Image (cartoon, rainbow, N blue to C red):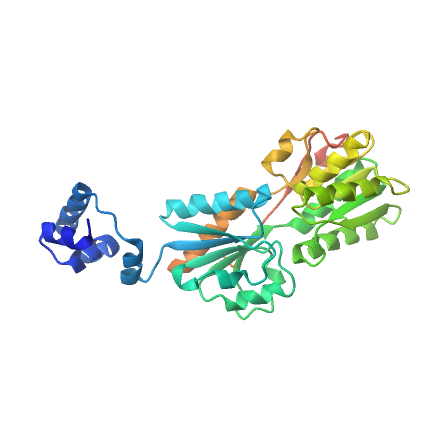
Length: 336
């Protein structure tokens, strides 16, 4: 069944059928209702490609994530999908997988907009954003991209504050020797979170801290870094990882070496991925509204596509979710 057959049965032109579907305000209610009734009876489904030619819109959005091995990015995708589906948009999901030329894999003529997680952006790769010719939204701090030709809309979390909040709590628990499991050093997000670490310990010179790096999604590498912390003298009594995936590797290495968590070493992550609640012990973490980030990114993009006014930048606060991997002797009210 095609649009010509619908037009023949309705006794109207193909253009009238097209306007009934895409520009209903240009067709009388009587004509449009008759056409819709015929479409329902004939089970006609509009061809997306043909529809895009007549409207100039593909109703398709590209969603680009660094990887899908981390639950954090799965939650972002779910949030994007929820909003886009409700707006009758399709979503194409791309995983960068450390490919700096990821934009070359996307035909920008086939999408109305792009949502990009900047979690693995470096000073070099962010320049790729100048190559984007369609509306786009970043899931990252917009203040990291002042050199762009056009400032993008962005949505993210106050992760600098989150790092400081985690260290402040672990310090209040009595810890004075820390292991910090950082992410890939070239990433902008890593550099921002490391700045929070250095700023904290600059104000607490009585503390000892060790910093190691790991890939954010490499559990085996994080496990090795956890073992390295155990060999330090003095040994850390608290380990803070820049995401929950790395914290999982740390938990594995600490527990497999017979060290008690949290009695001997407290462990805390960042992101609050759903799986963290089911670790043994369950993981204390800096909690971020991950799914909401995806939803808001999609909402901002739809505003940009339709030309509606929208905020340029949105930052969500974070908080602590304390579970079994920390002692929890200090009330959270003493920290906030």
